[in-house]
Each structure stands twice: as structure tokens, then as C-alpha cells.
Length: 163
Image (cartoon, rainbow, N blue to C red; front, side, top):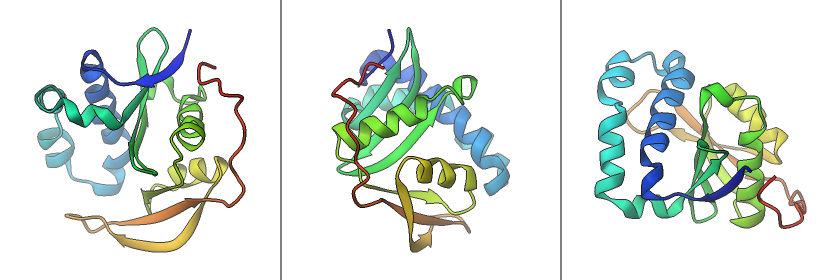
């Protein structure tokens, strides 16, 4: 049975794999920097960083359906990262993670790359709206835009995070 739960040390390999491969798939066309995508971004060092600094897992929740298929990283009420393994996209996992974050973790804002139109559309479909605020993405020529949860959007999910 699938459920959303707090991440553990046993999840670091899957979390690192999802983060690296999904970022490569979604951002390569935006940043066009293979040195970063395939040189700096590597699964093993990221997994090792989580093992060396397990406190980084305290704000990560995973979608577990026999194995980890997606993850969401929260910082207070901000969605910091949301990624679903590319093999399991379009199965509603990202939506369940966002809904969980909004209902259970009080998520109400995030930043997204301005050129990541599909992510903006995804968040709009889940109750977020662009605020008009944008700022440079540090270390790049790209911009990020702020999105906030629409007033009155919170819905009731019946307290069940195991759908």
C-alpha cells in the first residue's frame, strides 16, 4: 500500500537517484550546462552527503509504494523541492505529495524556475498562483518566480495520507 512518510537513512540512495536524474531530465534544456548536469551532479556524492548529514533528511518526505517513487523537501511552509522518478510521472504522485504538504505540513509558497512552464502549470493545478515576484537563480543566468497558495484553497483530504 502506498503512503507518504518521513524519509530515513534507508531512503538516501533512492532520494539521490530521483533528484539527480529528474533534475537532468527537467533542467538540461534550461541550463544547457552538461558540465554541471553530468559532472557536478552525481548520485553517489549526494547520497553520501545525506549519510554524512542525516539532519538533512528531517525535512524530506517520500512517497513509498513498495519503494520510494517521489520526494518532497519542505523548509518551514515553503516547498523547497518536489521530484517524482521519471518512470512514475503522470501517476498522480506529485499531486499527492503537494496535497500532503499543503494539508499536513502547512505548505503555502514556493519558488520555481521561470522557464519550467510545466512545473508552473502543475502547481497552478494544485492551488498555487504566481505572485509576480521573481529573482535571479544564484549562480545562473535564469530566474525563479514565487508562487503562493491561493487564499481559501486548502481542501480536506479526510486525514488520509495513504491514498
